[in-house]
Length: 354
Image 1 (tube, rainbow, N blue to C red):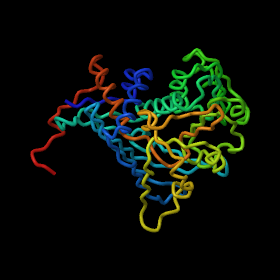
Image 2 (image 1 turned 180 degrees about the vertical axis):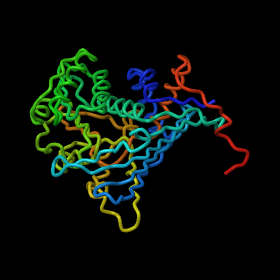
Image 3 (image 1 turned 90 degrees about the vertical axis):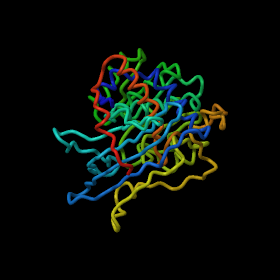
Image 4 (image 1 turned 120 degrees about the vertical axis):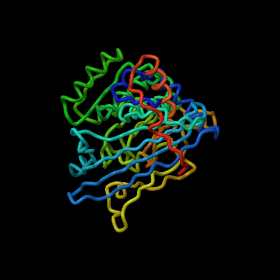
């Protein structure tokens, strides 16, 4: 039987306190050379409407520790909106019922069977949040207690939740362009985590004096100038485009979730997409570190209280091993609680080898 889990099911069964150690072990398997992941592939097809692109995004991985291989696939229509510093890419809800399409498929590496089909939105933000929390464990100063957040969406929520588990935060400063959103975020997260979360009216005040600075936006332009960074800060970015060259150059080293660059594939003669335009300069390989190296002790992480450490800032991706790791937890917990819909296994097998 294959288990079908919705985002609501995933929310009910996945908790960050289980996701954090599972993600660290998944990165350790990569670091030890036991797991394997493939570069993320983005198929980008321009549409007749200005600034609109069909995006088929895929990644896959095999995680022997969980006994599962995972494939994540999303079918999106992306729209370029805004201009100047406000330029970004937004997904459009064009699927049935004004919705989106994103799935994680889990396969048993011994029996070969399809184990689960999981809607990907919630497992993705939990995977990402846990990865950023793990990175903060190795890269933020041990006495870090002030965090600055740029963005107030789901990425910001789960990243803050994970980081609060590895550092004793006393103050979180948050800015997003819409006042109501940042104030609502501050109120909700203060109650959820028991931490003082304050909405700020400008970005510079959020960055200044923060031990950890997290940018969690969809911006295609640098969110703030790298000259704002201060010695000793640990900085994270969700998109490479959120950081400028100054930020990358000031970092003592750049930490990536995966060493491979995302593959961007478009029809011939269509190489001027926002993805291609946003490609940043190749950093010096000697300054690159992958999270798996931290997990297995191959790299020491932060070695000085004055180092600026940067997670992200380059077009790589979260390896698919995270979906195997968290998918294993989600399936086990869902079956224990009778959550989800069981689908007949014979629907997904065939009598001929392809």
